[in-house]
Image (tube, rainbow over all chains, first blue to last red; front, side, top):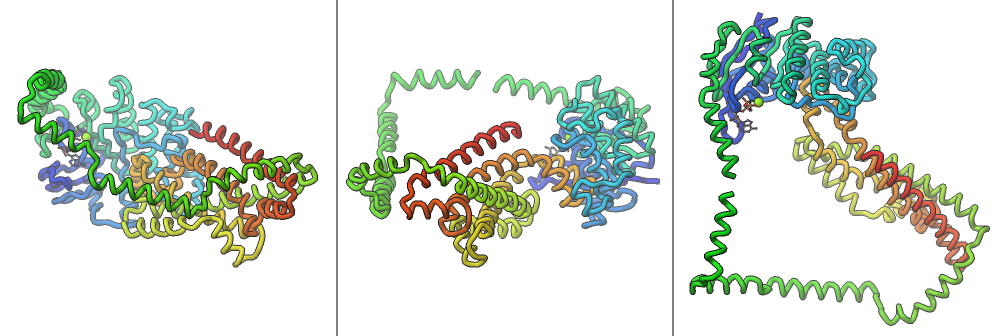
Length: 261
Length: 284
Ligand SMILES: Nc1ncnc2c1ncn2[C@@H]1O[C@H](COP(=O)(O)OP(=O)(O)OP(=O)(O)O)[C@@H](O)[C@H]1O
Ligand SMILES: [Mg+2]
């Protein structure tokens, strides 16, 4: 069954930048897909369109057959609740406790009035603590989120996303802010939890080796278009070299500019 | 690197050779430094306003000099402070603190919804924000003592009128402050919470307030300080607190009692200042 389907998605920012051009992807239930591509390829923009944070200028995105952009109010909130998001910079409430950050993921279905006083049902609290224990933060439940390390913070954000009991997990460069050793650990945790929960996941990654390690399928993007969409076994070095061609040249040029300035 | 080199080169060539064209250019630039007509007119206007305001403020140099002995006399008659007045002064100071604290707490609670309406990132609709801001600005323009007069007229003499006046003044004053605090908040966690499907009210309770409460509490303590001062004066218009007693003792020429009252106010406000600055340091 198809969980996520993008059909001919084109996206233009208000300033006229065309970030996506006729992008079509289809993700089946239980798949783990990595999106790769050089900086500015449009990965983050695609993530926002998938998540319903941005509305495509043309084309459509459907999650479980529902087009988020067409929904409003309560229906929209409940549809968003079915999609868990993980961001590069964690997006946690630093002063709040780890537990309270995870409980945010339960708000959409909690009692609208009592939840305002931070009163959450036992089932919600149990789920939150259970998820935190499973990502290895059982001891940190009462700590303030801003007292944790980067890797721990991203695990809190993961637990928040999973506490929504989503169908689909989307992550935009979830480990770009972490050092390589930590990054591999966090990515492994994400993938392990996705498998355990039987979820579908799309991960934007900048690290090719990480993508190869965890994904079943890799989508390569460049200049707003999909360049390839292959099972991980077929993503060979020449294919990747093609995807990143000229990027090194561009990076060198940027370095030279920096030196000049 | 290249930029600094260029600048050096330019300076080196410009200084020794002053071509005729460049001379004129320098003269023109030098004239620019002379005050223009607008500046002169502005300065004259400023002097005129100062002159007018000093006459209408009744400022009178000779009278001040003549009055100095009387001021000294007045101060000397304030000693010694009257100890009989102390229990009354303390009791009324407690009432004053009650007015100030109740008004600050109620006003702060009322200011939060108002501030949310006035913050662009919480309610992006321009009409909501501008109506809330207009409401706040209009009510903020009226001093607390005027509110006190009006509340005395409507609910009668006493501390209740004072409490209402402080509550109202605080709620609009704080609403403005809090709205500005909210507008500069980091919205990333807010957006992430929105993407989980959480309602706006829930996002306020779980994301915005937890992030901002230390800053808000620190401002609240600052405002409490000001409200104690304001509440000490409310008695002058019959709205409760220590001001009423001060007024009465002045009229009876009981300067010893006046001194006691002033000392009590002084001690309370200074200790409050000390406490609140210590607490605020812990917050931020
Ligand atoms: N808010 C915005 N307004 C205008 N243009 C934008 C905006 N955000 C991104 N862009 C542009 O859209 C294009 C795609 O950007 P996007 O952030 O999706 O790339 P990316 O693949 O995520 O890159 P990176 O790997 O650096 O995160 C870029 O050319 C970028 O400059
Ligand atoms: Mg990006």
